[in-house]
Structures are given as structure tokens and as C-alpha cells.
Amino acid sequence: MFDHALRTFDQKEELGTPRSVLSFNALLMACKADQVPKMFTEISEKYKISLDKVSYGLLVRSYCESGSPKSGLTVLKEMKEKNVEITAITYTILLDAFNKKECIEEADKIWKEMAEKGLLDVTAFNVRIMQTGPPEDVLSLIDEMKTLGLIPDAVTYNNLLICYCNHGLIEEDKKVYENFAENKCVPNVATFTNFIYHLCKNGDVDKGFEVFKDSLKRDKLPNFTSMKYLVHGLFEKSKLEEAKQVIDIAKKKCRPNFLNMWKKIERDLGLNVKKQPAPIETSSLPA
Image (cartoon, rainbow, N blue to C red; front, side, top):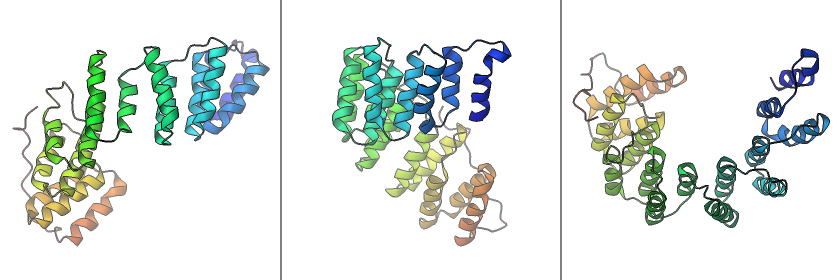
């Protein structure tokens, strides 16, 4: 695909269409991350392309995706020298990369620079929250968001939910889940996947089954691992009918490559019987 894009870009004069920074950026998007720096320099110099904030942003992204966010800082320095605007997106890509590498000092510098330029947005806060430790620090960041007039979204509360789970605070976790609607957020697949998994790990499979039913109502099926934990938890509590219901729904809705895995779980637990289980009732669940 990239070879075709490069040929098309090289032949633009023959095709009667001018080369522009837009077509150059499209070419960079077609590159693999490790190809971008070479193409960025060679092609822009060969065709005298006037680079813009998107071009540089793609270069920064490529360094981050290749595991070299510090090279992205060099690009930022060049952008500043050339008075090219650094967008919130570019800063956030770097912030995320440094957080994942646990380069705290560099991440803090990016965060401070974003704050000074008024570029902190919900996405940046979510990236910051994702790497934050204790729940009180996450709650502090959420309060800071609200102070800036930003509205936390489902990703924000998913991160808080995961934080509570990781610290064994399941009751607080339940409150976060129950307050999604109050916070004007809609639970997504990640919400159900993480919440069910941690509920089952902590032995609360009854609540896990309730949340599973809610996920069905919203057509947001949790992932294989969470449902497997739920099935095993229900089985261990002798809730065989409920375990069978989860398996049957999983088999109907899962991707083909998971079907044999569910059939094996069903056989291993002795649930592969002919009896038709009662359907899960979801119509009375709250919106």
C-alpha cells in the first residue's frame, strides 16, 4: 500500500495534480512508524514541501510508536524554532508515550507546558489519570478537570473504576458504576469488561451477573476473559443455570475463533447438556 502511495506521489506532475503538504501528510500516514522519519526528510527536501503542524505531529507520533519519545522532544524544539504550532494532540501523544515508559520527569514537563499554553483537554487528563497511582490522586485530577470546565467522560470514569479495582476498593467501584448515568456517561465495553472481571476476582459473581445482564441490554458484550471468570465464578457457586446462560450467549455473539474455546469450557464444566436454559431477562433493567 505504501509503495503504491509513494508512486502516486512521485507521479503527481504526470497526473496533472500538484503536490501539496496535504498529499505529503497523506503519504506519511501510509508509512509504517519506522519509515516516517526517513520519508519526512527525504521527500520534503526533494519536492520542497512546506511542512505544517500535521506533518510534524505525524513525525512525533512515529517516534513515539517506535519507542523513542525523546526523539519527539527534538521535533518539538524544531517546531518552536520554526514557529510551527504544537497542537494538544501532539503534546498528548508525547505525554502518553512518556507515561508508558515511566519517564515521569519528561511527562511532567509536557504536562506543565500544556497547562501553561491552555492545551489541557479531556483526552490529556485521561492519559494522565491512566498512569496515576492511588484513587485520591485520580479524584484530584477529576476535580481539576471540573475546575477547568472540562467534563469527565466514560474513559475518565473507567480509569477511576480500574484504579479502585486495583486497590481492592470494590464498594467504591460499585458506586462509580452506579453513578455513570448521574455523571451523564454511558458505560462502554471497557466498563463492563473491567468491572465484571474485578467483581468476579473478588468473589462477587452475583453482582457480576447483574452487570453482565446490563451489558446485554446495551449490546456491549464484555471480552472473553471477563466472561470466562464470570462463568467459573457462577459454576463454583453452583449457579449452573446462570453459567450456562452466559456460555450460550457468548457462543452466539463471539467471533468464530472463540467458539471452540467456549465449547471446551462448556464440556469441561459439564454444562453441554441438551436442556434449554431460560433466557436472560433484560427488559426490566434500568437505562
